[in-house]
Length: 225
Image 1 (cartoon, helix red, strand yellow):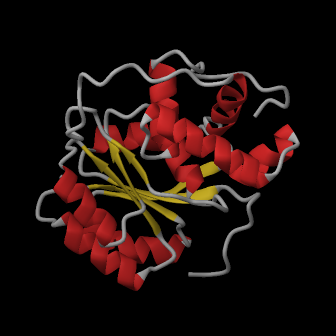
Image 2 (image 1 turned 90 degrees about the vertical axis):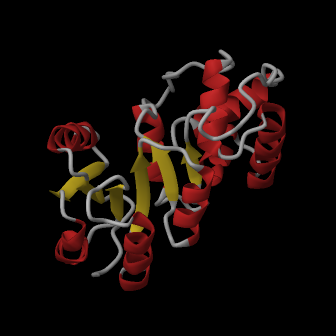
């Protein structure tokens, strides 16, 4: 891999999926974003190392249901060979054991293919965040959570404001600068938000808040972010 990309450069992505129609649609979606670019796509996991090195890729979107391919083994091998490559898993399944195995072997996030495109974009942008974190987005039933859980507790106006900025993939530091508060204050708000929503990640918190109509899906910000 060459020199790390500047934060102003588009995030370079490889898409790997054996369904060409879905793969092409995914690439079209990503390339429509000014800060993302798909540098290569393939339906052959064996080509990932070659393509990643040739195009200096930062992010790999990997379908785990590919024929003649064992995803945990692929992830482990790629993590050893290309430690700077951020691996994001795309799957039609939400088996907790598979999720944990893939994360243990080096995957950075696990996203169900039914996930909102906003969640996928946030997960990709998260790989460059100063406070990058693991993102897991699966249907509630497949994640074996309580499908009859009570509605989330209400958020304070400030907590909603913080979570709205999180929904725009802003880091804690960026949120603190926008709101004119200390970064520690933002972290405290996020801890309270996670507790109230019983969220396991930032994206999970955003999704739950949207579903509960606590924040809007595409909030408008003054600077056009």
